[in-house]
Length: 149
Image (cartoon, rainbow, N blue to C red; front, side, top):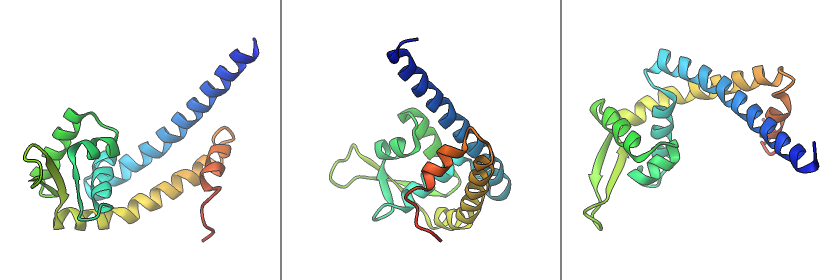
């Protein structure tokens, strides 16, 4: 195996490690958010992304990027969340073709209830991952710049 092959294998191993950590975290978050709040991880992500915007709204394209979804999947997700009263769509005043998605009061309330669950489960999953030798270095890297509590 040459140097180039070694570099490819190192990147591939890193990617597999990242995917394993993501899978562990995603599984735990999905289970807890669904059980305790009736939310999927991607639904939480969308509500969270909207809550972090000045004015609490985003264009659909921005929301798709924030949730790592295609535009059609984002449209379906927004429709489901809108049907539940958690967000609303608003026509852009400057560009009549543009549509903003905005968090409703009910969406904000649900998000605020779910955020402590999300944060607790994330911390627990990372603590579990820290005990797995293959994942520990990645978890350590995630905390490298975090302020000490």
